[in-house]
Amino acid sequence: MALNTAIRHLQRGDFEKAHAIVQNDNTEMGCWAHGIVHMLEGDLGNARYWYRRAGRPFPRERDASAEIDALVTALRQQQPAVKTLKQAGG
Image (tube, rainbow, N blue to C red; front, side, top):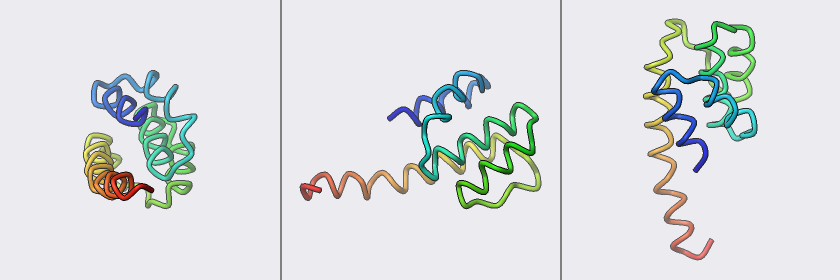
């Protein structure tokens, strides 16, 4: 999953590589990651835009590390549902 690669780049602080991936991902999770990228860049107006696209409130603390951790947790919670659908033939 490309989003997992983008997250690894974010965790390393390489927001340029992460941006190259997330700019092509219009899922809610991809938009959230895109917002985190712009938060790291200091482009808060653009970060807020992507948080809105993701349906998420913009974090008051602007703690990118906490946001990355929350994104990872959300993806982990989402993935078992995807695996279950694949196992059921969906």
